[in-house]
Amino acid sequence: MRWQIGRRSENVEDRRGSRISAPVVGGGIGAVILSLVVALLGGDPSVIWQQGDRPTTESPRTTQAQDKMADFVSVVLADTEDTWSSIFRQQGNTYVEPKLVLYSDAVKSACGFARSAVGPFYCPRDQTVYIDLSFYRDLKNKYQAPGDFAQAYVIAHEVGHHVQNLLGISNKVQAMQSQVSEVEANQLSVKLELQADCFAGVWANRAERSRQILEQGDIEEALNAASSIGDDRLQEQARGYIVPESFTHGSSAQRVRWFKQGIQTGDSKQCNTFATASK
Ligand SMILES: [Zn+2]
Image 1 (tube, rainbow, N blue to C red):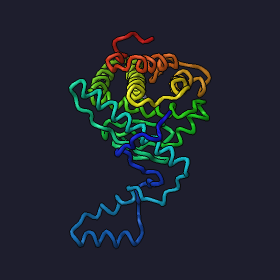
Image 2: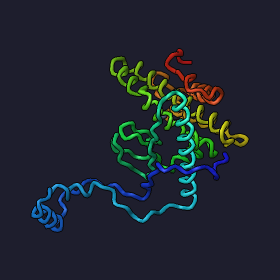
Image 3: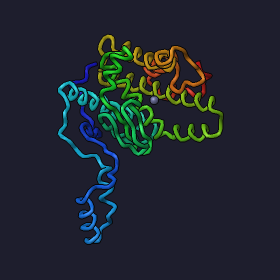
Image 4: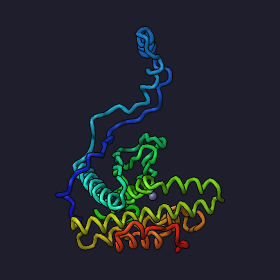
């Protein structure tokens, strides 16, 4: 992927190297004195207890390779901003850019506390994408999906969830899920995920048309990633057999199909995964 000359996003927040510790209980004599001081000054002593809850910044220990990766993520995010702003404008809407937080190990989002094992995720409450860059190492080694365009696809997929949030799709699906069985709720989750894959494809199509970002083999890299993180593949790796009813992201074939649909049409209106019977 040709990305080096691309614009950098202003929506990236780097929280790598921040530690999140559990709230301080006890706190020793220092804390007692401090709480007194705060109380004497008319403040709320409870702020002392909450301080342990906040991330304390340590000197960042990021490597050069990780910094290059962070730079790459910033360019991909900026490219999705340009693409979706123009699509929303064409449809008479305004695109609100999401934030993206880089973190290491664990992070606090408006959707709760998360460890990096959950993989990259989008929190609709703070309209933020969260990613621990170590996921890219897993993508390459554990899931055998190397390549920069595979990495770009991951960001574009999360941004796809943001687009669903802005369009009110996520809310509608959530409301429907609360009224159906678990199996049906899972099917709806799959459709939501496949649509985010399709939206990622739409981004790739538009970015290529306006900025010629693709190099030979890029599409295959992304398709390989989509296929490698299909539920069937993941379940088979994890437990040696698959249970289609429990899928929440879609099979490898489904993920590839919808990413292709987006990349071939470049039209978000062709991403209505809810209208088609699941294939
Ligand atoms: Zn997703």
